[in-house]
Each structure stands twice: as C-alpha cells, then as structure tokens.
Image (cartoon, rainbow over all chains, first blue to last red; front, top):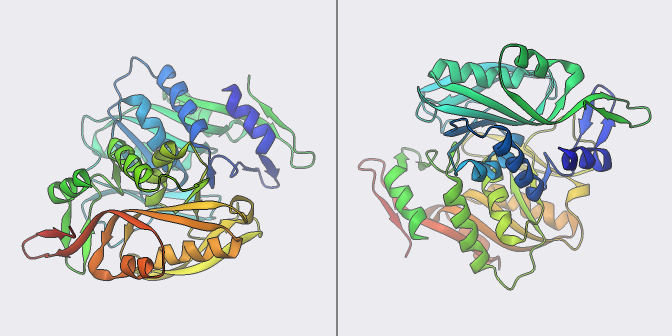
Amino acid sequence: MKELEERIVQQGTVKPGNVLKVDAFLNHQCDVELFDHMGAAWAEHFKGKTIDKILTIEASGIGIACVVARHFGNVPVVFAKKAQSINLDGDQYTTTVYSFTKQKEFPVIVSKRYLNEGDHVLLIDDFLANGKALKGLIELCHEAGATVEGIGIAVEKGFQGGGDQLREEGYDVDSLAIVESMDPENGTIEFRS
Amino acid sequence: MKELEERIVQQGTVKPGNVLKVDAFLNHQCDVELFDHMGAAWAEHFKGKTIDKILTIEASGIGIACVVARHFGNVPVVFAKKAQSINLDGDQYTTTVYSFTKQKEFPVIVSKRYLNEGDHVLLIDDFLANGKALKGLIELCHEAGATVEGIGIAVEKGFQGGGDQLREEGYDVDSLAIVESMDPENGTIEFRS
C-alpha cells in the first residue's frame, strides 16, 4: 500500500535493535483516516471470504481493528487481553506470548463467550516481526474451534521471517507494507516489491 | 443515550465490588456501530468547541476514540500508554494512576511529540468511576499546555463520585450512561435521568 509506505518513509524512524518507530501515525498517535484506507485495502484483498469477527490484541491493534471493521459490515471486534484482570472471569482461552518489545512473557486471554466454534475470523495487528503474538492469536482460535480466514498486518518486518513462515503454513497474510531491510545508521528503509 | 443504557441492561452484568461488566460490547468485544453512534452523540454535545485532538488511555479507550474521531473531522487520536516500553524514548509526559481494577499503581505516559501547547483536546474513555485515570490524562494535558475542551465517557458510575467532582471543577463531562445504583444481588441497574 503506497500510502502506508510513504508514511513510514516520511515519519518512521529506524532505531538500533531492529526497532521501527511509527508512533506518529500507527501506535501511539493514530491517523484514523489512514486506518480507514487500510480497511478498504483489506476489504479488497479478503473479498469473497466470509468474515464475521475481527480478532486483535491490545493495545495497538485495537484502534486499527475498530476502524477497519466498518469495511467488513461492522462485524464485532474482539481484542485479546495481555494480563489477567479481576474483571475477567475464569471462563477464557489463554496462551503465553513472548514480547521482544517489552522483553517479557505475558499471558494472552480471550473470554470463551466472544470466540466461538464456527467463527470466521480475520486477525488484525499493527506489526508482524517474528510472529509470536499472531501465533498466540491463532492458537486461541484453534482452541475455540474458530477458522482463521486471513491475517491483515499494517507493517511486516519481512527480514524477521514471521510473515513468510505463516504464509508457508497456508495462512493468507496481507501486510500493507513489508520492510525488507532497514538501516539505523542512515535511516533508510527498503520495502519488498 | 438510550441505546447505550439499553445495551447495559440487556448485556451488562453487575458483580460484587461495584464491578459492572460490559465486555460484550464495550471493552473486550467491541460493537463498532454502537461506538459510531456514541461518536455522533458526542459530536452533537461538543459542537461549537474547537477539538483538534482526542486523547485516551490504553487499552479499552482506544477503539472507541478511533471510531469517534470520524465525527470530529478525523482528528489525531493519541493514546496514553500504561507502562514504559523500550519503544518510547525519554521525551515524554508522565504521571502515575492507581487502578482499582488491576489493584496497582501504574505509570501513564504520552510522548511530548504528540501532546502540545495549544492543543484543544477531547478526552475519551470507556469508564469513569472515581476519575483517577481521567485526572491522570488531565494532568498530562496541563503539563503539555494543552486545553481540555471536554470529556466524553461511555459509562459513568455516578455513585463513585468522580464525574461530579470533575463537573464541579468546571470540566464539561458528557457521560452517555450514568449508573446511579446497581445491585449485584438481583442484577438491577438504575440510571441517572
């Protein structure tokens, strides 16, 4: 998606340690008009598929998923939670994900009431690097007996391999920008064409 | 807002300890069409005010804020983060908020790049009880020199007093449903009229 690539070039920052900061428009400050265009792109890519639920993970995926849901007939958006809260009762699907950003493992939880057998799910997230978070979401879907119809990602760090691994496993992964390489020294970013 | 009150009655659950669970449509599973109607209600309430940014706090506020922003000319949405992440550099406004739900204190952070002197800010959140989280957001706005033009809340627990305290301090708080009392024994919920 040209618009997203341009925004990454204009406003993204490459930091040491394979960190790409896009918090000006994607995951701290949110450009909801861009999110809307991303929704249109995914609606086009996944057209013909039955999608009756969007599943994402807190926090950065939520805003994107909620804006994007309009392009899929206002289907319910469910966001997996990253830690046990006293407001969640015991009846939940749960798995564990390691976050490189936060440098720790955390539980990922979805209430059994909101993920069901027979659901046709589109997974949405802001970033895909090694794919740990997504694999957690896929695991929750399998536990529930739900079908993962597709995966919509804003920014994939292609060189970290998680996206290609999921494609090899047969998932329809549509990343709107795939960073093939980036250089913290001079700030350059190259996209997969 | 009649629609929101009806949803709370139909799908909300009252739990001991002043807990009102509305995770079927507000803060775990998200009804984005309801969020859109909430945005229309706030656009009506706050019309005539200059609002050029929406500030919320992760995680449950983000989806609401991003859908609602459409009704305010697609202004940027900024969400305050609840914990230090290595992806945030040092240049940030920060305060501390106590969460009764999570039963602990946590830092609340906004990058200085995304909250500026002269910003006219609408604060959005899913819940208002004692008002601790909102007061944290207000503090961040004051630190930045931004003006809080209004506060849009989905569900206010009126009996916990945070909303009325903010109104007494002069803030324009528009809560779309104000729960005046609720009873975990029989599940009844009464709204402020």
